[in-house]
Structure formats: structure tokens, C-alpha cells
Image 1 (tube, rainbow, N blue to C red):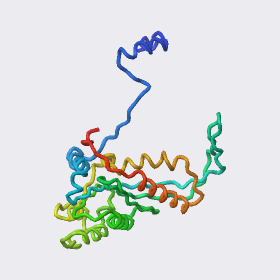
Image 2 (image 1 turned 180 degrees about the vertical axis):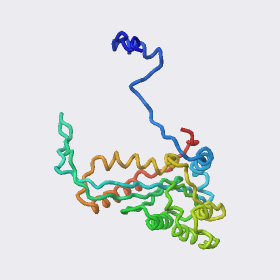
Image 3 (image 1 turned 90 degrees about the horizontal axis):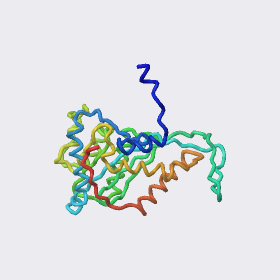
Image 4 (image 1 turned 90 degrees about the vertical axis):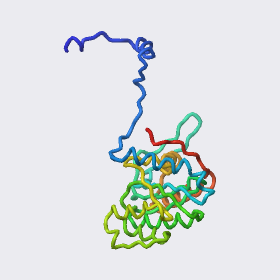
Length: 260
């Protein structure tokens, strides 16, 4: 073991010359996320075809909607004004910041048209989920059937959310039979209902197109923002999402099959 540690050093030029021969890229790496869901292999092929067939289902009166929530949006205000960029000099901003609480952005994306419905609040409770589902239902064009792809947060299976969904269904809710989570999940997944909820596997939010919007939001707004108050942050979020919905909304064809 001691002899193995005392090896001759290799120059950088030798490493650069030998690297293509061994097909190694030590300066690059790719991250991955393992899903602990035991039914991951069964859920992924179920939700991906919904988005892949969204454009074909739309003329038939079926709208595919995927939703997600961005929690813990920190409202930060820089302690000093940011100096704008000048020729030959980058923009300079203060490292320290003041915190003014957090906000939650919940949004739903109509896959076939690219339109969004959103709500901005302080928390993502069952009450906020009910308010968002009703807003999405009234803001987006009416259809005969809905297929909702949501994350695995437990507020989607609350009794209040089931009461709101029962107003869109033809059958009664029967609250005495929906006291437990599995019973409420069965109610939402009933294919005979007008809205049917589909959930991706755990740690599988990337299977819905709604999650990709949260990769755009930090780059275009949050990375350079400085909000003096929580109300100002909510106004900026509202203006940004409205502008994105008006100028950049477009249908997209989903080709993912759920494989990493």
C-alpha cells in the first residue's frame, strides 16, 4: 500500500494526451436523483403519455393540465443599491441582504395551449390549494374533461379539495366515506369524474412541464431581484407571470417517456 502511494507524478500534458484514449472526463459530472417510490416504474409511463397526447386530446374536449408549486421564495432586499454594468466593468451588488419573509407561487399549465393560471400566497395549505384549483378552473377555457398532473403534496388529497372537486363531478362526494387519505385519492383518480388527478412518483416532478417553469423563474427574475417588501415581491411575480403568459405562452410537444 505504501509503494502504491509513492508513484511518479504525471504532467498535465500527459493527462490531456491520455484522456481521450481512456474516454474519461474528470472535469465534468452529471447529477441524478433516485426516486424512493416503489411504484415509480408504473407511475412514470402513466403520466408521460398524458402530456404527449395533450395536443391530440384538446380538440376532443379534454384538457391536460400540470401543476406545481414554488415554495420558500425568499423576499430579499440588498443592503446597498446595485451598481449597473459599465463598459469594461461588471455590475456590482451588495452581498448582504435583508429578509422580508417568504412567498409561495402555485401555477398550473395547460399543455395544449401554454396558458397558465397562478396564485401567490404565504403558504401552500389545503385552503390555498382549493383557491388555486378554482382559479385555474375559471381562468382556463372550459372543457368537458380535465386531466390534472400534480405533485405528491398531501394537501391535494384533503377533504376540502375533494369537496371543491365534487362540484365539477356528476357523482356525490359522500364525506363519511372519504375520511382517510387512500379513500380520497381513490375519489380523485376515478376515471368517470370530470377532473381526474394524476401524480408523478416521489422526487419525479420533472415529469411534468410545470416544473420546468421554475428553472426559468430564478434566471429571469429572482437572481437579479431586490424587493423592499413582501407586497413588492408579489407584484413583481404577478407582473412577470402575466408577461410570460401573454408573450411566451405556446403549446409544446412532450416527448419524454419517464426514463432518466
